[in-house]
Image (cartoon, rainbow, N blue to C red; front, top):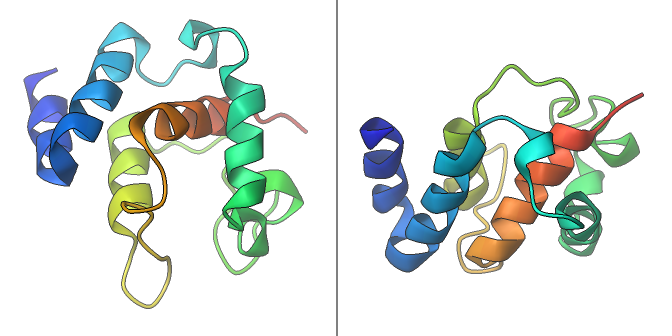
Length: 113
């Protein structure tokens, strides 16, 4: 777990600590998310335009990869959302807070066909 915390602290202070605590509670598990987290994450996904690149609510590849069933761990997903990828994905570090990020990860983990 220390590696995850170090990575998250590099992402940005208090936000990283909030998400780090959520990850420590159960990384890569939608079942460990608080009630309603996936539903709130779906709203974050929709309101931040994620579906423009991650089609069918993240269930299909589009301009961006399919999110459903991703083998990436939560620390990678957190890093990518918060930092983006030059020429491929924008950074959302100034757009979403720690709770929204945790909800968004819960949504990604909950995706089914």
